[in-house]
Length: 218
Image (cartoon, rainbow, N blue to C red; front, side, top):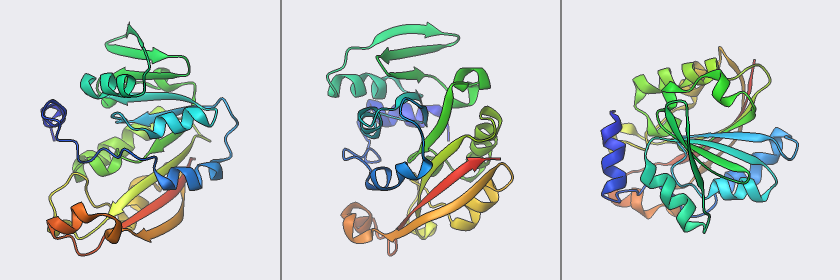
């Protein structure tokens, strides 16, 4: 999946993957990470997610990474925020107060870039990527973050043959295989959500589950 795919989605406003509401699992399970207020939370492939506003409102700081500048621009505009725009290495940094979003390729980040982050929030990253890229993604996450880094991961699971992602189906077995070497892993909940998602019903999805995991870097 090339970068151009995502650029075209944002340019054509084909962003059905964007959730306008705060993710309920974030609200219900974030406290399970036991992070002190003021902690810096890394949000990969963040888009213009409203979840970042929720994290700010809870007293956390946020560092996002997003490939497309339209998404970043819209995030600040739609939340009535005026960012400072600067250059950081080979990236553009949009920042205001306790939030900064880097515009660029996640795979170009180095441990130095995220050295102050103590947690990761992944609602839309892993499930946005096809299988081969998921392996590379988790490998890079593992290289970026040191031991004790905590994470909240949210995934979809459905019969993959019934829909061409993204979002992709990521099974529990795959999550275990991807993360077990670098992280401890605990499944917090699994919920059937097909009835709440008519968009997926129209596509022909017959089963849709959302799973939430708590991770900690070994």
